[in-house]
Length: 421
Image 1: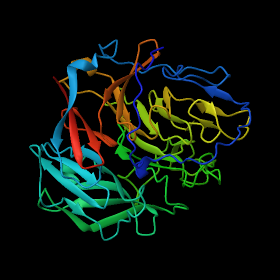
Image 2 (image 1 turned 180 degrees about the horizontal axis):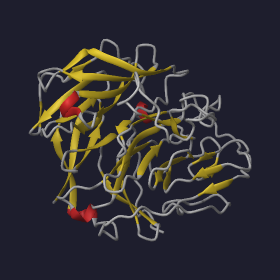
Image 3 (image 1 turned 135 degrees about the horizontal axis):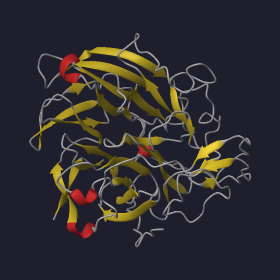
Image 4 (image 1 turned 120 degrees about the vertical axis):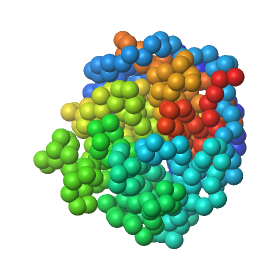
C-alpha cells in the first residue's frame, strides 16, 4: 500500500463552496451491518470496514504504465490568468482548437492559443444565481455531434438556488452562443444552498450524465442520498437524442420501477467532478466528505445502479445509521483525511501523448491544501495512490484539451497546465 510521504499545512483559505465540506459536530455512528463492496483497499486509508466484499474486475486496457511517475520531472505551468472563479474547462468536438472555460457567475469564455478572448461565448448571468459559494454556473458539456447540431448543455443554479439542466445552441458565429436558445431538460428544487454537485458530461455510450449533491445542510438530514425518489445525491443518465426534452435509456437501472428512471448511481454526498477514462470507459467520481474523509469512487466498466454508501459511510468509515442487511455499498478506491485537505476535486485519467509516463494515471486534488495525487490501477486490480504535487492553488477543477493534455483550475482565476520540466 502506498503511503503519502508528506502532509501540507493548510493554506488558511476560505473553503471552495462549490465543493465545500461542512463541519458540524461529528455524529456517533451505529455499527454497519451490511456488506461493503470494496474495489480494493484504498492505498491511503488508515481503516476499512470490517466486512469483506467483492472486488470488481478491472477494465481491460493496453496501458503500459505500471507505476506512478516521479513527479520531480514535471510541473504545473501558467496557461492563462485573469478569469473570474473558473470552475470547468473543456473543448468542443468540432475539430477546432478552442478551449471553453466556465466562470461561476454565469459566463463561458473562449481560450484561443493560450489567450482568453474578450467576448464571452455565453453570458447567462441574468438567470444564474451565484450568491452562495456552491451555487452558480457549474458545468458544461458539448454534444458529441456539436459540429452538426451546435448543442451544448450546462448545469447551473438559478436566482432561487434551484438546479437547471439546460441545452443551448451556438449561433452562426462559432465563438458566440445564443442565450435565448435555452431549452430546459430538468429542474430540481434545492432545499439548501450547498451540495449542488454541478458536473455534466457525455459518457462513452453517448448519453448525458450529470451529478447532484444530497441537497445540502450537513449530514444529509432528510436522507436523500439513499432515497430513490429524489434526484439529490445521485448521478443521472439520459438520452438527449430522443424524446422531448429527453428519453430514458432502456438499460437504466430503475427504468422499470423502484426509483426515478433517470438515476444511474446513488449514495453520493456532493460529487464534485466526475469523468470517464477515454480509453476504458471507466467512471471516476470525487465525492466531498463530511467531517473527516474525502474519497474517490471508481466504477470499472461503468455499471448502473451502484450505491456509493453515503450517509451510512463517509469514505470507508461508518458515519450514521444502520444500513440494511442487503446493502451493497461500493467503497472508494482512494481516500484521505482532513489532515491532508478538506474538499476533494475529482479529475481525469491522463490519455495525452506529451507525458507518456502519466498514461492511465488518474489525477485529482484538494481545494484547501492544493495537493494533487496520482491514482493508478494495476492489472491485478490493486491501486497505487500517491501525493505528487503541491500546486499552491485553490483547486476548483481539472480539465482536458483535444489532445488529452490536462489542466488545473485555480478558483483565484488561473489555469495551469501539466508539462515536463
